[in-house]
Length: 133
Length: 256
Image (cartoon, rainbow over all chains, first blue to last red; front, side, top):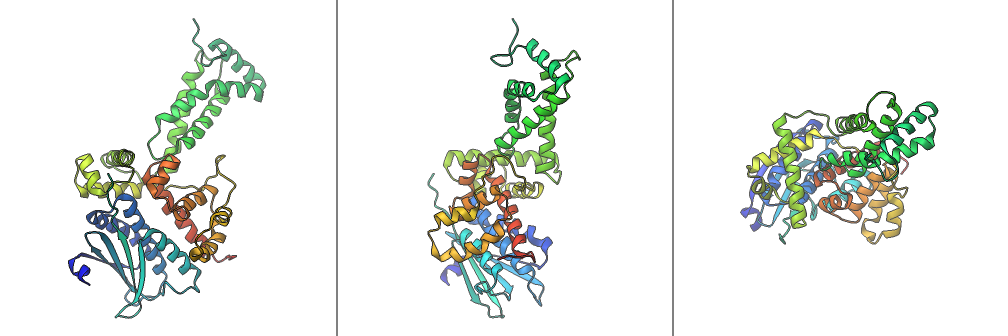
């Protein structure tokens, strides 16, 4: 919680429509650059959020919007995805298993918590790589 | 002294072989002519390096251009074969880039910036053994971070890469075969097996790319070094491949 207070926060709320996926990627690229992630890591996060966004495109969503909350910390980038009803950790769905597999490969941490507003929040964490050179 | 285009054939010999080939279309003669000019097609392919396409693919394309040039060349015209072949091969390479790598034509300024960005990223990665961040590219190129991000975005939107075409270099080994031999992490076995059915519809190159990234755990820069292409190209290919995989998974005719 202390970390969250120290974070710079950027919020992106956008319609749950396919044509918006490019905006998600561009936003991740911009935020990742402020976090100090390198291009590999930035691309990983773009892959992760693209995957999440596409997973939730087909989901019923009364609000019709998805919200990404980027928390920029000194050593990592955290992204909280809000406005989703699908349980990513429901193993009955093949698509869930696939998406989770991708997310777990490209993010350093993947968490799901119940949202106070109902549904779930997915938290993705990417640590900033230590520069060796 | 007659300058030779390879160790064994003079220009005169090549011209006379073309005359024989024109009348006979003998594949053996064609093979000799191809071998005599492979250096030319390779050297033209190399001119198009560092534009995001693997050299092996470029050599294949240039070789196709060479074959076309050999078939179409008229030895009775007073022109050297190389004079005729160079524009044919270069045309084939340009067509390849036009058809395969770009669906949106960017303004020249953005294209140049994208090209410079690509070079800067490759240079940095080679020097430091890791990919740069935006601030580092910005410093290297002397442009603002916003311009870098805009350039990266334009590269993404302008090129739609595909690995769907098969080529001779494709391995017959499927990802499922590879995973079967190397699976060490039981935690993700279920996920991997779920992917396997959908992966069989991907080309061997696409499977290899996914294997390197998600099983071997290589970074995009490491994959780029291994395949001899740019990190940005790996990024586009991965995105494209993941989209194909997702489509395969959501298709109604599932066999999983």
